[in-house]
Amino acid sequence: MAEQKSTNITWHHGKITKEDRIRLMRQKGVTIWLTGLSGAGKSTIAVELEHALVENGHQAYILDGDNIRHGLNKNLGFSPEDRAENIRRIGEVAKLFTDANIITITAFISPYRKDREEARALQKEGEFIEVYVKCPVEVCEERDVKGLYKKARAGEIKEFTGISAPYEEPLDPEITIDTSRLSVEESTRTIIGYLEEKGYVKF
Image (cartoon, rainbow, N blue to C red; front, side, top):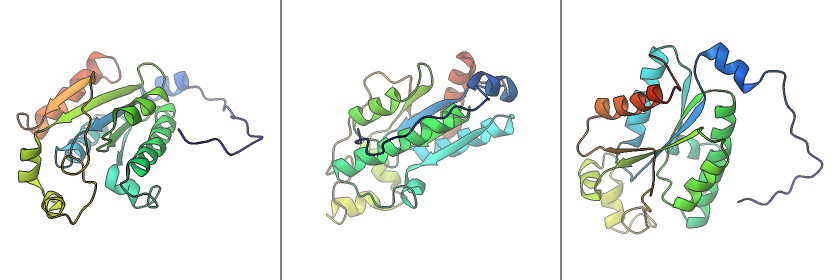
């Protein structure tokens, strides 16, 4: 975890509580953490999930790996240390969004269990749903819409997850989706079904 350098600071509470927001918005804020290899389908599922939620009157927002690296995390590379800091920052942002009662969808490779568990630890019980977007690396390579695997195989991209850097599979995720077997629509319905079952949303 990052070292606390700021001093003489106090957390300020507003007059509106999380419970107030739940009543107003008719949903429970939660972080849906999509993790998996590049090309597994995380971003595609995130987009469909956000659309389905908003179309049904719910407030949802995507924090996407590539998008975040254009701004908030543009000073970070892909070393293990930078990957950890990347996920730490996203975990803190997701916590704020969830506290605002937004259904927050994150789509990051987040290859290390320790980093994902630290992101979970920031949230209250029941406010973090880990979704393992599972897909064999061979299938991810076949999709390779960005041409990243080809570059990684050629040595043009260093520390590429699944090729020259490790991916640690979740040990006990709330949801596992095998995108080599399920369509985007089926994957999205699986997550929505879980959200309904657990009382985060009503359709």
